[in-house]
Length: 265
Image (cartoon, rainbow, N blue to C red; front, side, top):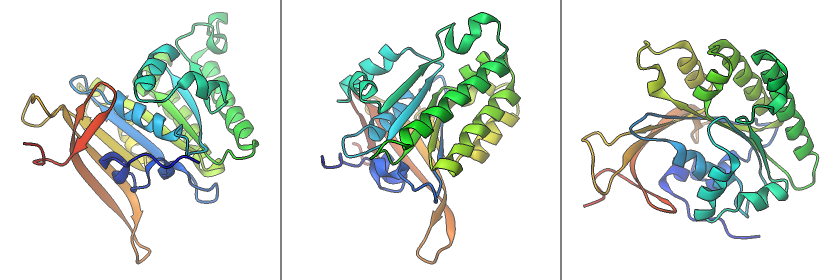
């Protein structure tokens, strides 16, 4: 089996275990990771990073990817630059890609309601999880949703329907030990006072990754900052605590560089 890829500050912030951060036993349950970004600084690179880690050669993970934002070709092109061939992963049954941009997806072109569509969609996810876990060597499933704000558009603006759907997906973390990764745009709700959907997502999440612009404005070598809030980290005494990591990042053509504030001159 291939050696694990080098860890980054982002990996270390997620317990320092690289891709294995998602590989928990069904008995222990999985985790929910919420990525929040804004117009000035997209968090898509975090989703790409986590997707690549889940599909790395030393991992046995299977990914169920729900895309409300982009077609498969978009992710395939980006991940190829990062050294991960999504077409091969899909053929090998390690990636199940659900393209929600297709009008005929789950019968939306046949007059089904948004609720019908989301119920059918969760049914597909649950079936994919159960099928993947039945195969030998498949130890862990990660469900990735890109992104929640567009899901809300698909639900005709119903935050309650989206939240119900995410609650169902979250239940898979306890039932099957799956992990759930979601991307949402914090500034979509800038005209509201911390709306219920955003607060509830942050409450549900075990890890919140905030992607924000550089605090002092634009810089050549710094594209933004990450704040990783990791809930319920257990220390040596058996007690749990929250841990927050802050660092900067610079996006390159085929990778992202992470570094602590002040370490770049």
